[in-house]
Amino acid sequence: MPVTVTRTTITTTTTSSSGLGSPTIVGSPRALTQPLGLLRLLQLVSTCVAFSLVASVGAWTGAMGNWSMFTWCFCFSVTLIILIVELGGLQARFPLSWRNFPITYACYAALFCLSASIIYPTTYVQFMSHGRSRDHAIAATTFSCIACVAYATEVAWTRARPGEITGYMATVPGLLKVLETFVACVIFAFISNPALYQHQPALEWCVAVYSICFILAAVAILLNLGDCTNVLPISFPSFLSGLALLSVLMYATALVLWPLYQFDEKYGGQPRRSRDVNCSDRHASYVCSWDRRLAVAILTAINLLAYLADLVLD
Image (tube, rainbow, N blue to C red):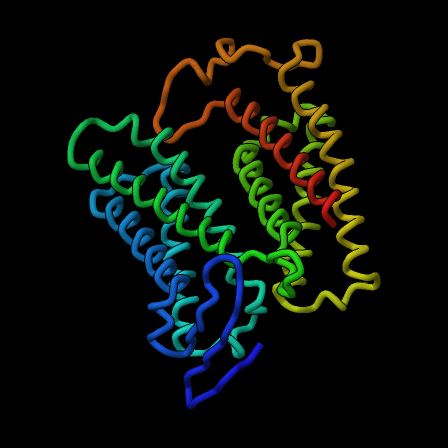
């Protein structure tokens, strides 16, 4: 890859099937005129507008509203940092691997904004009375969707192509690690009430499964971001294969045990939502216990599929 350095401007010529094969200027304001730079400006503006609209009318309360506001503020802040690093040509001084960090963040940000775009309108906006606050909330949801598409587009543009040498996090298995850890975080949010699982050892085992698999996947991501995969006593590919196999086996047990003990009356479960007194009333920013149990069961199946794909691809 030819690289020309002139003062503080670095010109890197790349060729890819994403349509980003033109020279990319970093360490210069011209970086913002490149397709990826323009896309990041769209991410910055859309997340900024989203949280500004909500903050201007105080249209967020409760755990779900706080999650959405955190998502937009966090994504805006990190995107701003990435733009500053690239404009200043500071990639070499950044503490994390620049081959892995931007696409890892973009994948997380796409998932974060997707969750906010779903959770905010379904648990908050629909319960608001018509007026200025509701209009702002609807507009914020729209900009959240725009941000989600922008981040997903960055992932599609910058992910590794067949035969291309790049960071692990730009590959499909690397992106699956992001999905696995994100889904686990959402599961943790739904099981934040210990009453959902503390009455049965089998359910406590499920929580242990979610925690152990999350930690192992997070370690794999952090090792790549820190460029320190060689610190393991075994080869990194062997670690990844073992992680995927162990996670598949553990999640398979959770997929059986969680629905069995949550929805089967013989094991103390509640098969019908109508029988759950917590679900009798509709409240803004509140997800009742039965809905939480169902969500965890669905997310467990999603993560099992992700780990299966990871096992096949690693």
